Length: 296
Image (cartoon, rainbow, N blue to C red; front, side, top):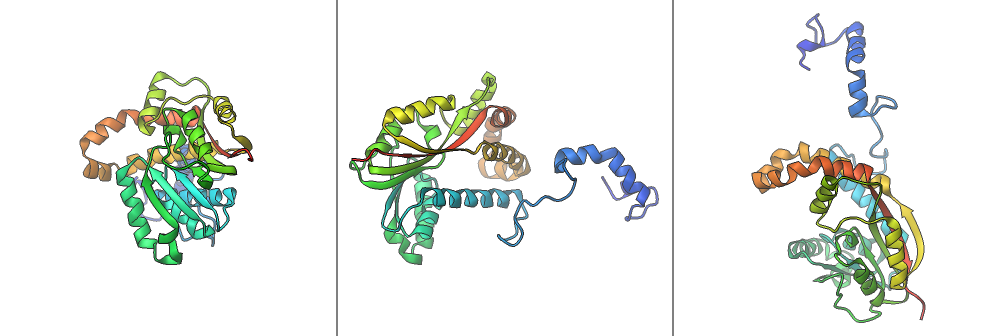
């Protein structure tokens, strides 16, 4: 809408009648894009508790930090304990956990480029609080861990388990490297309903993962591996919103994506976005589990 569209008066300040006419014409459209409960600005960032967030990308970063802090609080690591971070990404959660708890963290990853970013992050932050002495990152396969039995007090795996081609093997390996009574926190998706083949293909290609299975299958595999389930939290609302935000940011930053990765990346991803979005919204559940290894 241009300035001229605001009203026949030609003024940049619309008359009350023009304001009313705008809402008569576009009120439903605003509700579809802004939110329908009140048609005003929502509190996406709690007032006075965090630095201002003014972009969708910044809101996504803030949401990830909040999630990490929640997971740190949930696992309850003591300063003397040693945690294995299975699928450590670019190292942010491992460093954040070590900073907040004083514990030791070893992260593993199959991506060498991500491991390089882990090391860069640690180098930048390592002087603070002796982090360089308490945090380390190595190349490793979650389904075949290169650590001794009972080497760790605890483990976590944030959004890594969905990638595994053999989830039971990954669960057994996590159990093996934990001391008796050690706890394992991880997140996993569950299938809901009957998605189309196109939706399943879009999700598996975007995530580089096998097709999702019902959540009940995961619970059976956890118990068969030998873990005792301590708690399960349904966090599906967050994964659905994340899928929505990802698709919006993809369109919003399309020019940046093309400049950095080329037209080939867009040609690969474009057909996937709509079925990926509907899969995340309609067919994907998301859970946080805390389980324990048996006592001696």
